[in-house]
Image (cartoon, rainbow, N blue to C red; front, side, top):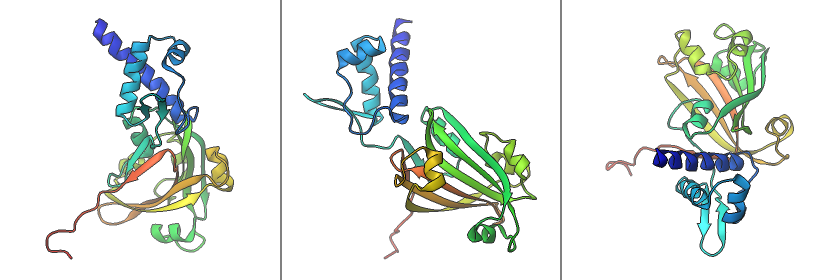
Length: 246
């Protein structure tokens, strides 16, 4: 019982420190207070604190420099593997952070030309648009907009989702997404995006434009996500070259 309690305590301390990093209370490169100071601040023993720091070192959140102290690592906390097509909520939850959604807006609107073309809509036709900001332990990390045809999911259908998955809603209508094609581009936060993410204008972003299709190739969802660059590391599985390829 005592061993289990010590293990749960170090994980609890680690979760608390991780949350402070995610929320921006501790910044990359920042030195943590000394162990005695931090242990007093948290109301825990130094041995429990050291065990928690060791866990965060293993996860790449913190790094200890001998004779200097413990620092927040210059490494993104959220790893988005684009070879796997799943929602932002699942990605955040998978690493033990609390996913959330704020600033939801659902409306029928005329989409950008590239979105209308992908969805097979005519000129001036409207699509359902679902805008929301995704959070990780309270920190705003992704500003996203999803578009789909109104006859597939209406604005009221999307509004009913809350922080739920558009993929699940499509699957419930017999339109399960079989694959997606994503384009990644560097960007900076400006105007409404900067305000929604609560970051200064010019903050670095990774913008992901994606079309999602059913097994027969029908595009049922188009998305644009602006990820905070300092919160994400994006990876992609690349095939080849094989032995017969130059």
